[in-house]
Amino acid sequence: MADGPRELRIVTLDSKRHDRAHFTCGSTALDAYLKAQATQDMRRKANAVFVLEATTRPSSILGYFTLCAYALAPGAVPDEARKHLPRYPLVSATLIGRLAIALSEQRRGLGSVLLANALRKAYESADTVGSSMVVVDAVDEKAVTFYQAHGFVKLPESMRLVLSMQTVAKTIGLT
Image 1 (cartoon, helix red, strand yellow):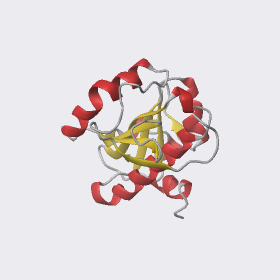
Image 2 (image 1 turned 30 degrees about the vertical axis):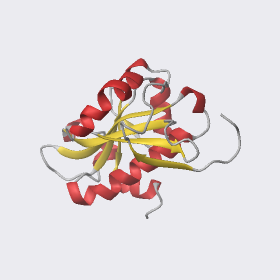
Image 3 (image 1 turned 60 degrees about the vertical axis):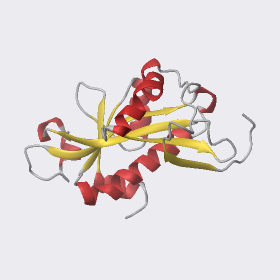
Image 4 (image 1 turned 120 degrees about the vertical axis):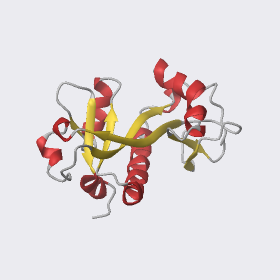
């Protein structure tokens, strides 16, 4: 990949246009999901899958993320994140199920670009589907550090992190 400015866009995965076979991010599970499961999940409406592409090479996937509806027990949410939540048996949320950047594109800030877009999409859909927070399940400690740097709060004794929609609005510059 040549250095220098390029125009990037985030679009819905298109199995006929996007080259999933050559995507590799360093995580076998994340690579396998994109290659073998993503289009089935989209067809079944289980996940929305979005890919990052350069306009000059739209078939090449630079990164991707997934979004879906989710719910968790209020007791699982730490106090600092709980103050903005409604008192229901389950807390409605949006799950960023996967977020990955191609090995050749890592360390260029694209993970933050994808996360910002995922947060914006989650926030914009929250009024329609009812979602009071964003949840992520980090794949490792490096991912935990990444999400914490973006304001996520780690749940005790797990790799799960949360961010209230109120904080999402601040993070993406809406308040």
